[in-house]
Amino acid sequence: MEVVIVIREFSNNDLTSLINLLQQGYLISTEEATSEFTGDNRKIYIYDDGIIKGFSLVILANQETRFCNIRVYVGKPYRHNGIGKKLHDEALKYAKEQWKSKAVSVGFTTLKDDATHFFQNLNYEKWFIYHDMTYTGKEQPEPGLNFINYEDKYFEKYITLEGESFYNLRRANDIKPYNCSDFSDESRKRCLDNKDNIFLLLDDEDEIISTIYVKNGVLDEIMVSKKYEGQGYGCKTTQFGINKALSQGSKTIKLCALDWNKRAIYIYEALGFKIVQTFHNYRRFFR
Image (cartoon, rainbow, N blue to C red; front, side, top):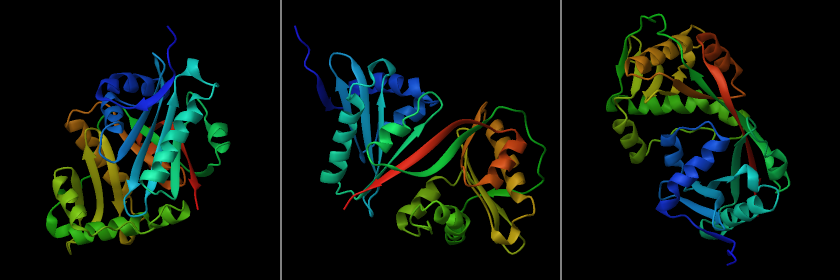
């Protein structure tokens, strides 16, 4: 009996197969892979002719701008026969018709495969590069700084610092909005929900010197006030984050860094982080 070649929508029974497929091409944990396929703001298509050979995933990344992210992956034995383009076109069609998207991005790593020409042929243009970095070393020297947990009274200062800290990075890489400060109620709630994971270093005037987010071995939101830049706080804050993650039982510590941010990458590598995976991001605009 002939098997009909179909592109169909995702069902929960596909989850394990998609995680296994994704892990063939990316260094990604099962937990991280699971989060890729769950959430209300995404649509998933499966190429299934009796065997699941690939998938496409489109995520509505920004409700206001309608900006979408697309991921396409086809198992190695099934490439070069049009499956990837068909899956991509289904995801792109959904983004344009259902979410009225005017721009989409794709991200891929060249560690095991290189999809550069595939996406260039689909009219995507190079955008920015970021690195996944990991640390598997021992405890760092104690930085001797008194970090405290986030409190709601620091919300305005924290969000202002976030906008200031990432402005130059976002502008240089054309990541909009350039000022990412979000003072909404949703943002305030998100900070409160993560108060046990956000750590602040304050000066004598109760102003924020630096911050870091630590959860499940992931370091993020490493920020230093411009007033205190160049004084070693970025390094010491990262050391604090490493030690905090180790004390919580993490064996491998992860963070991401844009390739543009050479200064931060230098600090992370000096502390023992290694680049394990590099993602190339491309984007495409529509009229």
